[in-house]
Amino acid sequence: MTKSTAISKYNYLSVKVSVINQVMAEETLKADVGRAASYVCFPDSYTILSAAKDAKLNKILSEAWLTMPDGKPLEIYARRKGFQEVRTVSGFWTCKALLKDPKHTHYFYGSSPKVLAHLQENLEAEFPNASVLGYKSPPFVPLETIESDKSIEADMAEIAKLKPDYLWIGISSPKQDYLMARYYQSFDKSILLGVGGVFEYLSGDVSKSPEWMKKMGLRWMYRLLKEPRRLGPKYLLLAKGIFKLIRGV
Image 1 (cartoon, rainbow, N blue to C red):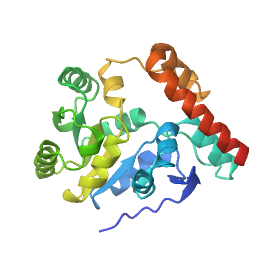
Image 2 (image 1 turned 120 degrees about the horizontal axis):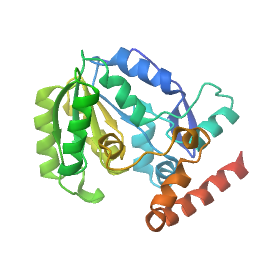
Image 3 (image 1 turned 30 degrees about the vertical axis):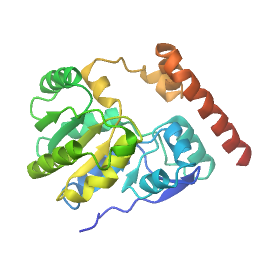
């Protein structure tokens, strides 16, 4: 089976990103649930910058059913190229929107047992009618072995038996992207969505940046102030990559 909704894509640092916005994303995911197994990526600019140097990751992102523009730079670039409908798509808000529909089922795979406990508590309070089939914290697996790890394989097989409509995967990129591309065809009709740190936001373990900062493209600043040592080198490399991109526009 194939997806009924075809979404065009634009090139950003050689990666094909969907021409989409938040409303379109939610409507598309609702309309096509249960039609065919697929995976959805939410790469930020740093992940895409990495994919520009990694042919395999580039292929994984580009060939996803939906590759969401998760970040202001992706939105700005798309609109400069004439795709005026493109807006940043948030995994956080996408997950919340889909949890409101009690007809569809969900499974959450990722993060730590502590975060998942908080996540379950919060979701049951905010979405009492949501149909969540389960929560599972995966073992730590290096990127190099994420596609061949037997424990991951066993987890995917067990989750596939439950046939969730939406399988939310909350591990770091690009690990979650490699995992989805490797295993999505093992599922019947599930949509796998790699949403990274969204579990921590939904659980309340990590504070989310204010919406006004996100709309102004300042989410990176909020995160940098929270974790300067970890994110400083990453954002410096990202800034250099975006500068090169802008010079080439």
